[in-house]
Length: 179
Image (cartoon, rainbow, N blue to C red):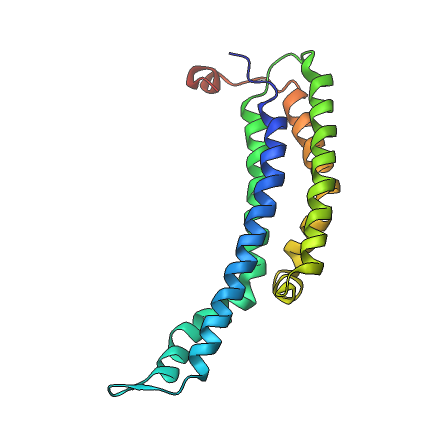
């Protein structure tokens, strides 16, 4: 079975999933922050428990951790996706470079064009969304990643092609396992 092209076509999935994950993470962080802050300002006693104190001890700690570490979570997720693409390229490599080299360059070119559109759409989202402060202050590295997505797409695509077409021979274990 010829598995060439799998690694570079996954760039499209990488671009779209990166945008969706960062937007969903930002919306979740904003919504959780609003809910937590509204519960902290409510001074209601439920039985023998004060609701704002209980919220501060439980959800308030989670909210603080999430707002301070959401950036790290997003960057780890984005780089894990990039490394997964490189691993797929490694496991679908072949002994002899094939004619699909030109097709892979075209796929990377189209992925670059998609990345430009996604990056511009994300910039437009940042300027229009009322809770863009979450993206700018708490997801600053992920925001920079998405704004530089066209360059990152080219770099990852080049690394994928190098790994795919480097003619690294497969070991006996890999041939038996069917990679």
